[in-house]
Image (cartoon, rainbow, N blue to C red; front, side):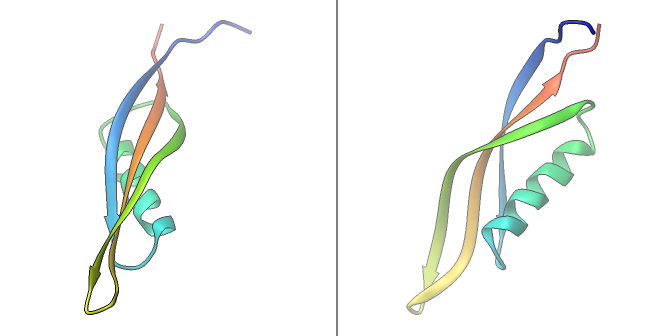
Length: 69
């Protein structure tokens, strides 16, 4: 087993449906251009209110990816 080095990147996902969907949107989009994604950490959850109801969810994530040797 070798030692690993990770790099962090911050991304923001959004969804009109749910926090879960906002997270999955961010991770899937990041995975299109970043190799070796291994984990994420939710930093902040925000939302937009319109007409007295939740209209949109926005989630800030730190994603960790392994730096290649």
